[in-house]
Image (tube, rainbow, N blue to C red; front, side):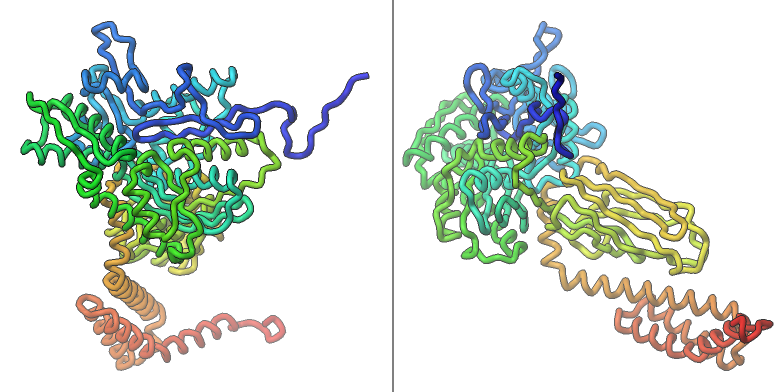
Length: 623
């Protein structure tokens, strides 16, 4: 007798089949891949047993019979000998132009602009940051497939919380080049919280302090029975362990009486030695920096105090971001029940001490800070792949900057406020400004300021085919949809006719790190100025609308007025038009109210005429 296999609604047709899903931490200095095996998340090792893959790619000269490229430790070993073709810290170039990459001239390889983005010149030709990242991602993909002897179903890839749309899209593009199905992009601090929350059963408000090789993130989350709600997030996408290395190298040059080093190979050697000394100082009070610079052997003893002094400004920058995020979350530092340290750079004693002193408690470091992000991503991937249908993990991430559209007068109408939980869909109704308007141009922007000129332009599109009607009669619903990866689509629909237009926002790569940080800072420092500017623009828009409506009414029913009455209204219109040009918001509002009051009798006469025309020739019972 044949047996039938029955599956529950929503369950896989083959409930015993397991999809291979992994979490990938694509880092600035190193990357990892992790998966849930036997119910436990673990990082997957390479053949040599190492779980860490240096985020370094070296391109070989095809004319010399080179094999194409070297990746990971093999490429890292060649960095000093072939710095121009050995690409490290490529994550800082993702979604950027050359001008927007901090300290671009200090890189050991040459970066140029091509098609609106930063690309790297190599002996094998121009390479985009997405191509370089794809090499790293593909290596991790092959590692996972070798570990399970099966094809990869998909991956959750982590990104810094403060990555903007362009950087997130660049990450997805890199994964696509590597042949990876992206199940979701999640923020690195959120991934760390997943690992800590599930491993330790933690509940309450937690801060995730994530200082990696090239980026810094700080997030405040509320953990409640498997629900991870991100209350606020922030950070600096151009601050990390690499900057500590450069600061130490610059200090050594200063002590030796030397200026900036021009030779790329020497710079690469100096930074590698600075990193070694930095790591050594995490376990002992002093270390010796040794490197050959401009033909001179430099040997400098570095005490831990020296290192902490020359990098104090960097540590202070992280704490400035911490304070800002706590304000955004609306919580005091005494309400934070624990601080999770993530990223290899948090091994520095000065970082742990500074964070501990600020929060008044010792930071949590019981999970490997290098691995915790990949482990959390693996847990999320396992659930998204359907391997853990009974799991109670719910991830509520947020967007870092507000999204909105331009309205009349160059004002921003925010539709999705910053720190809104994603995925989300928000809608708002708008209308036409002029009689007979059949099209509406929509300008999508991102930022915290009230004027479009002070925000970042994301996209433009036009809704056409609106039936001609009086100004203000059309009802146009604009809907913003932010998916779980933090990527945006916008649609506009005229409710009466059903005409619709939409756009998936794929921003051109290129929002500078300074712009990202400045957007929030400007929103606070210029709040009063923005309010005044917005009030003035709104007053002008209302005045222009009042003038246009009054003139339209005079053209249609001016015969109801005597010559003196019409002259009085015309005078009020002229006065208002003059005030709009040079007056303040209060003056414009007063003149607008004066015109409204001066036309009240005229409006009543127009209403009476309209009623009479509607009733003319009709019987009482018909009415």
